[in-house]
Image (cartoon, rainbow, N blue to C red; front, top):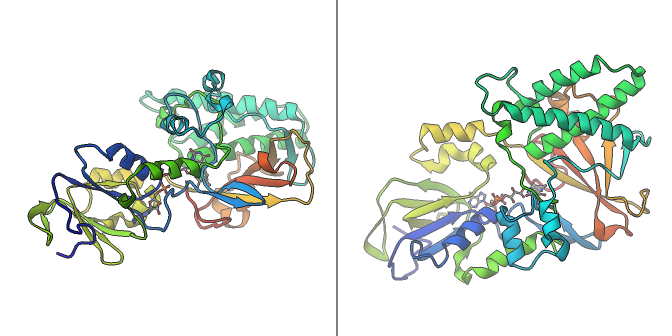
Length: 397
Ligand SMILES: Cc1cc2nc3c(=O)[nH]c(=O)nc-3n(C[C@H](O)[C@H](O)[C@H](O)COP(=O)(O)OP(=O)(O)OC[C@H]3O[C@@H](n4cnc5c(N)ncnc54)[C@H](O)[C@@H]3O)c2cc1C
């Protein structure tokens, strides 16, 4: 059997393949590298670069994060934080104990300013009042973890029911009530972005409390997130990564041979789009869940056990994108960090998820002023939108 991976080496121990060269694949390879259980290690990466959804690029005159931006919960229990710290990629403030102890509870910090979609400033007191209500309700949704039966199936339905009850007691005029609902809708959008969904109605209520937030104030990489994956790559032997090798099929539970090692049998054969074949003893799959959802019917031969197929089907997966906006001059104050956008006439009680093709932009959360561009007026904004919309790149979270 022709092999794209053997190449005449002496096989003195298991051969391990990692499929996918994003941070999961690189992290797995780093752990395995040099381990006696994996003397022959390769990463098969579909594209010409490592890092996957971690990608920092020069743009707008500085460094821009196209994919991941923050280390969420940067503290000792977070392996990304540990790696970043070990590679010397974090500053004094990010490494400080004070920063690591901050407990945000997963609540978004209040914006520096808040505007409606027609440009009217919204009072930060009103935003704080709605944030307090929203996060009080979100904290309640986490209490159903070990409950036998939940009142409604999803987080979205629970929040809507509770908000509906609060609205009934609001005594303000209609305009103020509508503005409060539109502000609450912004927090719904934030939660959609965090959960990687276009509607909180798709997020099951019972297990929602399983998601725990690590302590630590979210931090960024001054030199770009990609410095992390570049450093992991640099710590691996040069021939470990094989680029431009999209894997087509993983044949497992078999008995495969390779011409270079006639006496050796391998339980797995990994086949690539270009016809390359890589026999192995073990394969670590790190391709995105979205890829597995689309291709698991043909990707594994024989198919995965029913329980695993069901798990892949059940776990949700959505699209997260960013849009970068550059302005001639700042319309924000010099110390402004985050500009929240409130889409007028939206309400969490009327989900727009079904009409997203036309109204996807109403899922935009706001604008993060990129620190290094404060004086050149660039903004980034986060959108969680439906899978068909390609706003900038086509990354999925
Ligand atoms: C816009 C955006 C913003 C984000 N912001 C944050 C953030 O601020 N903080 C945070 O923690 N996370 C963030 N994330 C999520 C984070 O980027 C991902 O969770 C993480 O990078 C996923 O790493 P991974 O290795 O699992 O997958 P990926 O990075 O997707 O890597 C998978 C790799 O597998 C390769 N591959 C796919 N199919 C095949 C195949 N058939 N054969 C071989 N190789 C294949 C791909 O080319 C890719 O290199 C963000 C994501 C996006 C899209």
